Amino acid sequence: MRAFWLAFGLIAFGLGAVGVATPLLPTVPFLLLAAFGFSRSSDRLHGWLLNHPLFGPPVADWQRRGVIRPKVKWLASASMLAALMVSVAFRLRPGLVVVQAVALGVIALFIWTRPEA
Image (cartoon, rainbow, N blue to C red; front, top):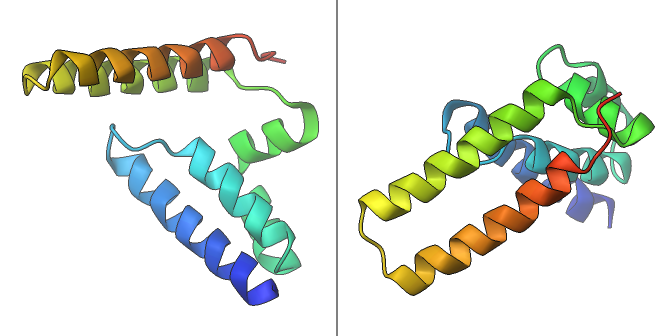
C-alpha cells in the first residue's frame, strides 16, 4: 500500500509543479494531495514538501491551521477567472461554460470562507 501512496503523492506533486507554470492548472490542491500521499508513504518526502521554500508554506498553513493566505486566495481566484474566460474565448458550448462557472463559483466560495490567519 505504501507504493500506491508514494505513486499517488509523486503524481500529485508533478501536477502541482506543472500548475506553478500554467495558470489553468491548480497548484495547492495537488500539493495537498501530494502531502496526503507522502504522509502515508514517506516521512522524508512529507517533511521535504512541508519544508520546501516554494511549495511548503501553503501546505503547512492548511495542515496546521486550515488557513489559506490572502495572496493564495487572490491567485486562485484570478486563475479560476482566467480559466473561465479562456472557455468563453474558445466559444465552448454555453451549457458547459455554465457548469464550469458553477463549479468554479463553489470552489471560490470554499476558498474565500476559509480563515486567513
